[in-house]
Length: 52
Image 1 (cartoon, rainbow, N blue to C red):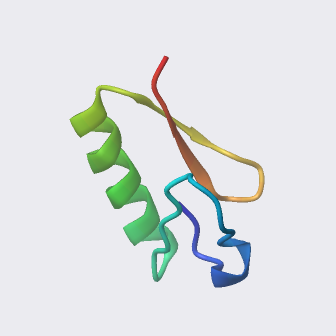
Image 2 (image 1 turned 180 degrees about the vertical axis):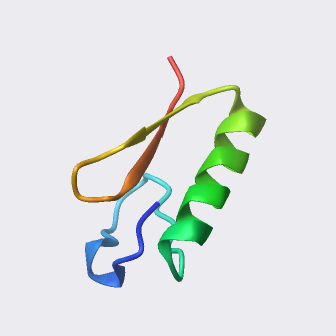
């Protein structure tokens, strides 16, 4: 999850864009709950949803 459209890359991963930081956080938390996963916020401000 990112708020920077320039960071969206191709590939098989799911990359989502949010319009602002609040939307990014809310969407990430909702996705993580649905997946029973953890959320990590990177130093860049992007979020990762990790399920181990």
